[in-house]
Image (cartoon, rainbow, N blue to C red; front, side):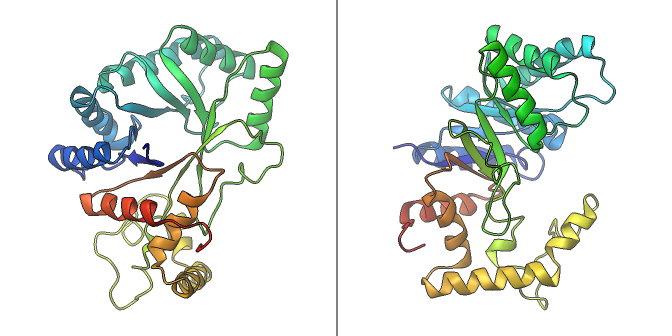
Length: 288
């Protein structure tokens, strides 16, 4: 039976060694997990290289990776730029075709016609199978859907969106989003907040992204604000009333959701994957 879990590999190759990545992937395969999520920006390509090594061992592994749009790219240069990005990822990943190619955000978008034609080119040449969007606004989504209707083609196959019991991507909340998209969610534990480890001010976790952030500082500070801390405490109380840990409750809500196809988790240790697998097995929609 296939698992709902996708292994996020942001830490692979720089904070997670190849040996540990192999252990995590071995356990994932044993439990019906068939997809890795990566990006050329993770560790400046190290994550994709590690995933490429894993693909050599598990040839049926599906790969989802991302691309971004260069600043000030001219419309006429965009198709070749996109194709080159895709080919470079394929080479690092030891793949001939990407299972999922994700637009990581819609900054610096070329014209919609050029963009859609470029995605169709990658599909037509067999370089990608599915195209997802992530971190994009509703206007970009609607413009692509308008192109699809006009040309009678399919561009968007799915959405990769942030979703946990504290936050939900605004794209998911739009009534105009169609029901036939695959939905992959990420950040199920909200940067570790939903493990409860930040509730103790006396014993804050060491080497934490939230406490030692050098980028997106305002974002991380907001996550540690009194307002968010209160929400975490309320969630912990709801979990306790159901005889669940905060982590079990947070994972369980996502695994039990019929509207979510896959949940991307980012284990840096094998114990993190074991926790998620345990939560997937014990999920109970009525209990949650």
